[in-house]
Image 1 (cartoon, rainbow, N blue to C red):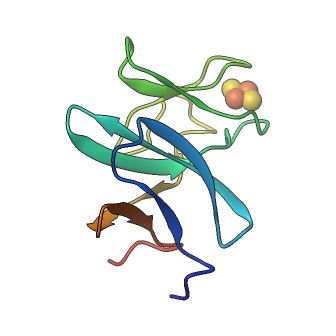
Image 2: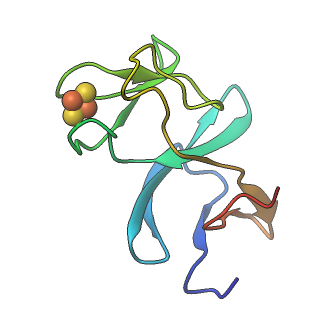
Length: 102
Ligand code: FES
């Protein structure tokens, strides 16, 4: 991976939106000490997603889809999956690569 493709955010950030490969908007956030990363765009109609700590989910403000992480699953049959990533830590930064290493 080149630096231009990798999203790098400060390790201490609570919720950060950034760009992966300059084309995909991704959100990175902490949950009970765990660092999670997923697409920031709702697969239904493209709204920008938000973290809802009370529901322990990533939610869509337009029509209410909720995705659980790290799986990225919703209960909706057509929009059941949200793209998720496996962030890593390096030198005080959270790194998100365009594709999962597995
Ligand atoms: S745009 Fe997200 S649920 Fe419709």
